[in-house]
Length: 276
Image 1 (cartoon, rainbow, N blue to C red):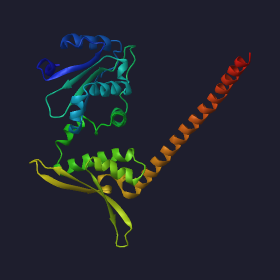
Image 2: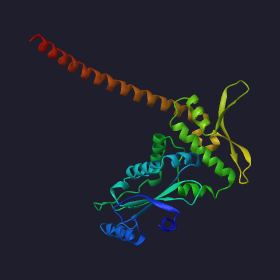
Image 3: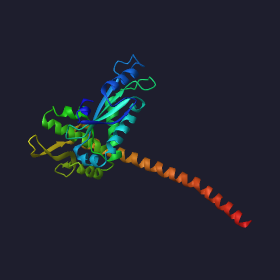
């Protein structure tokens, strides 16, 4: 709340707390936490950071950040408790903080089990829904700032390749999706022309702002990003999509069959009416 009071942030949304001043808000959190005194860690804090590529959209669509925050709260079960969402405006990239009470309004505990994995999965779903660039929890983004430059490039590229792979069903889709992120897929072949592996390349900027080419073999990004594993994942994604389409077609066909007799019955009734 200090940054809000200093004019470097704003409260986007809140529930169950007096968000206009720090002390009343803390009192509200404490009062509800007392409903479950056995819970020692009752405060949930998460910071979500947007990619600079989405900055223009966030300026044009101020509701977008609220929508993302609301969907995150719901997906993590935090919408059943007190919370305040605060946007900070003191960095080059937009981000917001969520402070929530793990003691829900009914006194039950909101689980933080597998918190990171659940959060990452939810963020990927929200990104896909709103066509956003890879979002990161702020802690992860800050942790990358303290690793060697080469390792930071590798970690960032690994996450983006994984994200593209999750929603691709063919190598062409994967290449096209990565191309939008500035990453080129290189197929490494032996003397006979047989594919032996994949490399990923992009142009990044070093600490001095100079362009440098960054390249990694898929297997060096992660063992799950080797050529063989990527081919298996694409096949699995393709099968899943085919099954989803098949189910949709079955549902549409079923709805069509259900509507048919009703229409026919209506026409018969109209016919009887005309004959009277």
